[in-house]
Picture 1: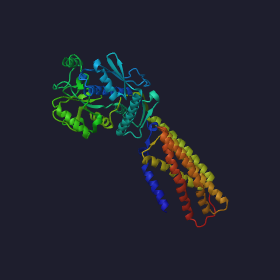
Picture 2: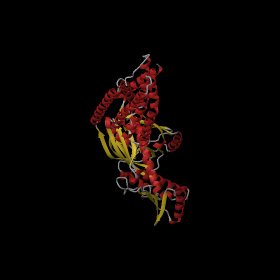
Picture 3: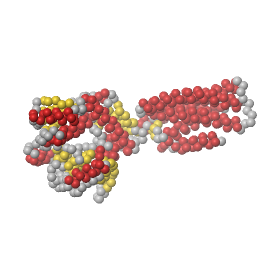
Picture 4: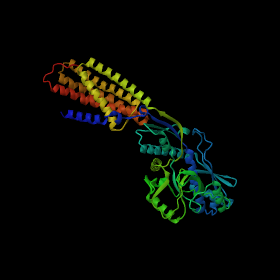
Length: 544
């Protein structure tokens, strides 16, 4: 009686988990439709960023460590960022920058700074009056590999926030082409928004404006800004200044043109310093993004803003200035990003900031949309194959094992319920190969019953009573059942661990089906026989 209650409880729980199947079972890309993307991570962007960072660091070290007091007049240019690399990403990973304006007397100090701080990452070569820094190939490959891995993590975080069930996000390619990422998103109903969310670099930076704040913090043309900078700096643009574009808004808050800003090349705060970001509304009921900095960076940010009251602070996303408000007072760990956002744009920006900035830009190499009609055809054909296969199994079991075959049919039905219930309970995704795994599971479940029934037949032929024959049949068949199913389960686990996409879907249903078939064949089938025998005092024959 207790075994019956356990079986009933499991059936009810798993049955309710899978009902209604249209809502509870997650369908994969091949059944439900969706998006298939092949993305390329532009790893040269990461190498360029590495060069920019070390360029700024070199200038500071020459000024502070080596005593080259004219360091801020030294010209440093990022001239080799691998633009000649092949379009498919197979080109060599290169990055270099050139330093000029250092006198011959200070050449030894440049080499000294290189040896102390840059020797592990950059090679140095003297070219006339210049020094050329070239990134070392192993370092370039390491940066490229880390860039792709970080891009995968951030894309997954963004997709998970968007709410796509069971996305497939994996690295593709070898060697020079290993900067590709395959993304499969089943059931996506807004492909353009998802693509924009994936590709949004979302590199947030707060940079101090260089020129005194003039009430708008922007110049209407690049030429006007360049002339102003050169007039203040003896005809050259300072190397620690960068010119960025931003939107010019009209009185209605609509984009009406482009403004140009002179901002510090080194940011005060970046997206890596964010502790959190969320969508909110300002006093005009406009969508904004509120952010919180880490405790350590909040203190530094407070010091910077406190020392620069009255100066402009540019809010930069992906090298685009959203706004450059005036610093009216000290700002610590909390702030607000305003940019004439719609609520959806603000939500996507907050999502991208929370998931982390992409370390490099993303290029779409391939895009396919799988229609749901194709998925429905696959489902119909898979169900048809399952019904035909199941019907043949039922017929054969009744013909060969007579009334005992009804036991196997009941157990087989429970096995299918258990599989779908487990898929729904664990949130697994059903794919077309997964349907194949279920059909294979039916065969595995029947195989266990065949082993048991044949053992019972042998015991009956040997002259045993029905009750002892059933008991001996289950005991002697158990080792063969476990051996066959455990070896198959090990293979399925390897498929799940090393496979991707549809292969993992097949492995999931096969693994769940194996566990269900062992339980139903050994535990449930034995309970049915015992229940039947308990209702009969003396039994001379068994219909098997």
